[in-house]
Structure formats: C-alpha cells, structure tokens
Image 1 (cartoon, rainbow, N blue to C red):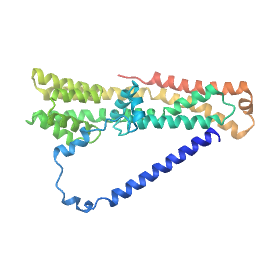
Image 2: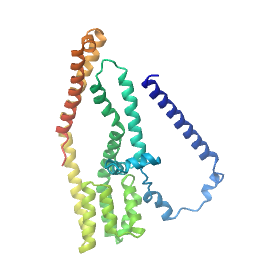
Image 3: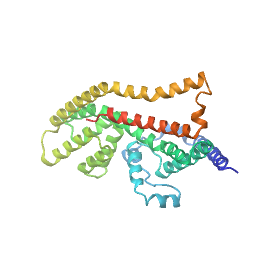
Image 4: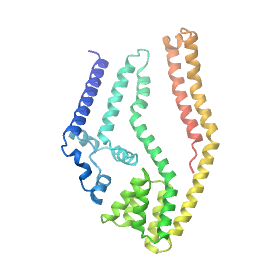
Amino acid sequence: MALSTVLLMFLGTFLVAAIAVWIARTVMERHGNPEEGREAEAPAPSFFEEESGILLRDAEVSSISPWRWLLKRSDVVERLKGNLAQADMNSSVGRITASMLLICAVSIAILNNIHWLPGWAILVIAIPITMTPYIYILHRKKKRWQQIEDQFPDAVDSMSRALRAGYPFAAALDSVANQTPNPLGRELRKTFAEGALGASWEQAMQNLAHRLPIQEVCLFTAAVQMQSKSGGNLSEVLDKLGENMREGAAIRGEVKSLSAQGRFAGYILTTLPVVITLSLLWVNPTFLNPLIEEKTGQTMLICSILGLVAAHLVIRKLVDIHL
C-alpha cells in the first residue's frame, strides 16, 4: 500500500474520531446536568471562583507521556508556550506540535505524488505548509496586541479619572478592568486578581508586562512601580502617559498610511505573475508544457516560485516600519 494512501486513511480516521468525541461531549453537556434548569436560582459566584479560570491555566505540555517527555527537553517549548499565552489560546504545546507533524506528513505524501518535483523542492514546499499552525498563532497574537494597543489609552485615562475621584489604586484597577472590554479587560482583571490574592502590586505589574511586552504596557507598569516606591501624583503621570500614547498611535497611523503604497505594490508584484500564468493556461493550455515536462523547465519553475515568495517577504520587511 502506498505511503500516501496510509496517511490519508490515518487522517480520515483521526477526523472521524474527533467528530465522534465532539458529538459525545455535546450530548453529555446537554443531558448530563439535571440542575441545568436551576441556573437562575444558583447564587452568584464569588470573586475567587470567578477569577480562578483567569489565573489557573493548564500548564501541561501534553497529555501523552512520551511526547511530553520529549517536548520538555526542547528549548522551543517555552517560546511556543509564551506565544500561546500571549495569543490567548487554550491549545497545548503537544497538540500544536502534533498537528504540525500531521500536516507535514500529509503535505509530503501529497507532494510526493507530483512525480516531476525533486526531493529538495518537496521539502522546501512542505516546510512553510508545516509552519501554518505556528503562523496562525503569531497572527492571533499580533491581532490581539493591536487591539490592546488601541484600548490601552482609554483605560489609562479611565484609571487617571478614578484616582482623581479618590479611589485607591486597587479599586481604580478593578473598576477599569470591569469596564474595559476584552482582550485588555481580561488582562487587567488577571492583574487585579493577582494583587487581591496576595501578590504584591509590583509583582503583579511585572507579570502584566511579561504577558504583554508592549511599549505602552511597559510604560504603564514602570510608572505604577515608580509611584509605589517613591510616591507622587499617579493620576498626573497617567494623564501625560495617555496623551503620549495617543500621539504615538497617531504617528503610527500616519506611517502606516504612508507605507500603504509600498505594501499594495508588493501585493501586486506578487500576484501579477500568478495571474499572467493562469491567463496563459486558460488561453493556451499547452503553452507552458515545457516548464512542466522538461527538467530544465521544472527547475526554472521551482526557482521562480521560491524567488517570488522571497521577494514578497523582502518587500514586506522593507515597508514594515516599527516606531
């Protein structure tokens, strides 16, 4: 039996098992709790019960013992765990790495059926396909950080107003955390829960900066830590900090608008060869046969695809300006 057939059978069995588990879990959740109709009569959860889901996160690398033993001896695990936490994803490191290995096996099996592809080209194409779950995690993290950067100036202004109204820092943080929508509200509630459950506010601020290594968050935590050590009017510091954050956001938006032309040109230069190739295949399907049938043409085709991808990455790097 061919390797590709075995891998496809494994993938199909895996999907069927996953669907069966999901259906069973759904049925158990609907019919397994006889007290579900009495939820309205149940007392409201206490603060510690409400925040336990925020603070207590499953830190297990994997539920499979041999796989967990192997992953714990790799330096990549900590970085992947940090990215998962910063992207606010509940998937474990073992699940992500197992999915990457599965995608790698399936992609190699499919590409192996293209007989004119050399071995090195199969590996070069399979590597970025394998990294798809990790790229998705980075995309989720970047999108979440962008939302936090947009929400943070308003949260700082709200905290400054609460401090001027006479609230202590803990009460001001709690009020702002409950009024701020996620994802920033969740992080602020986690910080308040750490301080309320016994950790020092300095340590809670350090943990916040560690979870969100964003410039605005680091400045805020540094201001709070400095005020707790040396004193001073924290509300005035937060006013100036919020104003500087808004000016920085305005500058970043202006830079992004000025670099939009370069990004758009990169997209056009990347998609234009693909559109021309598809047009030629539609007009004359046999016109590009030498690129597929001849060995020299196959090498040229693979090199051109790799060069196109590399050129797109270079253009993105040139127009990606960080302030």
